[in-house]
Image (cartoon, rainbow, N blue to C red; front, side):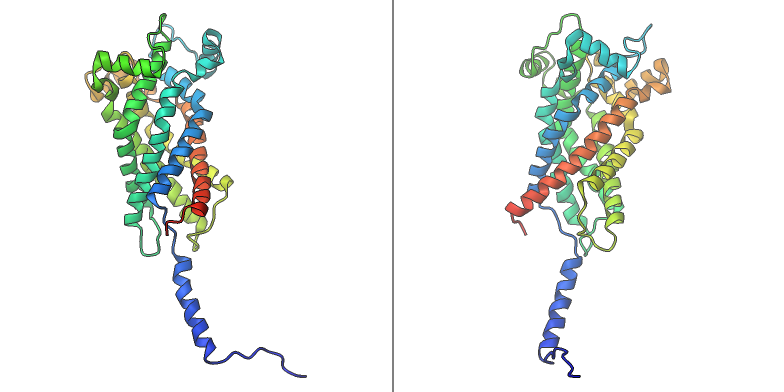
Length: 321
């Protein structure tokens, strides 16, 4: 029987092998994300996410501001929701949304942009980002977003929410509230609790990006460019969010107290910490953990899912390689 195997010229074979060898390193190298793409994708993700999850942030803040009293105003998450809806309607759960919405877009933009910028400079030769380096990049992103966006945004948000508990609320809206805060307390009035905010945001993003990067590296194995489905990305986001909640809720409580309408009671972040410990006990540092856990897990999962999906779209219409 005639042998029908295809004959390959010895002159062609070396060229094929050389081409394959040249392509191998490129296929095994992880792709980097351009910082400007990260900024745009992060901003879009932050805006969409906060519109979905804000009611849980509202409840968490109310419970943290509900200092130990006889008796406390709220008996728990459900009671806080019930009293808010009874007194102000469902829209009451969205009081302060404007301040967060205005801030969430630049916050996420700064976070992802800085993280990708830093990580692009510390990745190894294969384009991989190790766990320790991702933690440091996340820390840098968290600190910068705290100073540029989060502290003033959170201060205004907390004051809005706290103001609603007053018999005669004095803030009529975002612009009016900001004007009043600056008029009465100066620009520094929007930077209350800066130290606590830096500690919170820095540790938040360090933990989240570390967990996300570690899980992604584990999932992808030897293929750094292996695609992640939204379901997998969301699951990793939930784990990263939960880790950050259990890791830094005490810092979140201190930050909230330092930014409330009664922040004048505290001389400093340390003084606030000691007074909470002395008068309310260790458990007070974990007030609002349950609503924060639900809000943060959903927040982180949604942000990373939306961020990754927006990046896919941007990569098809915006070539930066």
